[in-house]
Image (tube, helix red, strand yellow):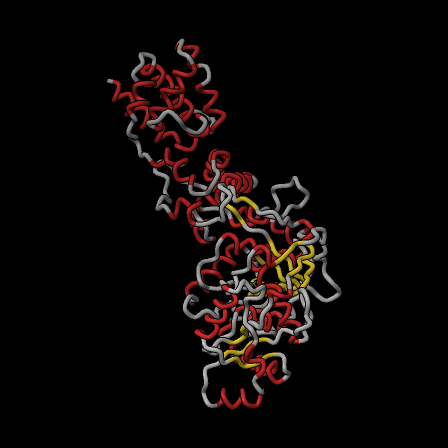
Length: 519
Ligand code: GLU
């Protein structure tokens, strides 16, 4: 992801915690999400994207998507496409970026390489950066020496600062290998930022060396490219993972060299697994793609991720995109790490499903799932919209996540002669009361089907209700026998609804085949 992750804890000291600024200044808010396409969009990245998007929307600002693809060995076009697809699925629309363009493009860093070279040259001309000809071996030897001498400062010693700029130019023109380094002002002092999440963070001046802007292969470092872009794109707030906090002082130095205003930083906490360790594959699915494939609702997923480190009011858990887009604020972002809890995600998903009307559930969840599973034609009846709505009303309260509807609707797809599980047969059909129960139910339902009343839930329930008493059979034994005959199992949707959904013909056929099995 970046270089300079080497920062040790002691390189920064957090001296105050109360800055909850992060409120927009007078400039229009412009924020960016800048994923590196070195992998899929993972949960942490998605949350960063959500916060940026929500912050832009809540402040009538602009949300920019930039692809940080300057690492040629690990970035791929395929990953870029996966990230764009994931962003679309999450519903995080961007105002500027790949596909949509914008006034500050291009929005792929590989298309901006000439710009980094140009800015580096400008900084050199202004005496704010310089060519460095030190070989990796020289640098390593110097680092080792400083380390062994327990020197306070162990970064680059600035040897090439002393080279006359004209001579340096000649050496570059002659093809000598070189990098470009920033010239950190000797009197810069500690770098202090007012982070909108962490409050005041101070980075010790002695830790800052003249770091590299352009590598010997001509590519820009992350700390340089990102600041050139963020400055060019007039980014006002940088909301990103706090694994980048340690890069921030270097970036501040680049802003200062460019003479560009330093944006407000907001470093958001890590997401941890339930064992308290950084969320990783060991904890299960980590990419947005996997959650989409598992059947989560995008809105529920966004809702859940938004709560990993942010809260509306400490109690509301169901927060739709429109609320997020209206009420998101950095002041409510916590600096404590958040724990990813798959059970809570599933619970939120369930709430979103429950909030759908029966018709919406039928159209958005049931039908697509059944079609994808090749189960368009429920074996027994001709499915009309009302039939799907009834099915939805039965299935919806039992569904936590869309693919579960396949198992929950299985009773429809057993044809006229379901296989009866041994357990169900022994418990419900092997009894003496089973035969009279099935016969009585068959007769009552046949009468209903032939009569004037529609073959619908209420009428079915009424037709069956008096029978246990008439037969002197317990309700459990009576309905259990019918359930076993109709589904081959011990569990099913409520009886009246199930029989309406199966329709008379199929119900009768299944009862008959169970009676034959009893013979
Ligand atoms: N491309 C960087 C990353 O994915 C962006 C970091 C930043 O937001 O500055 O980590």
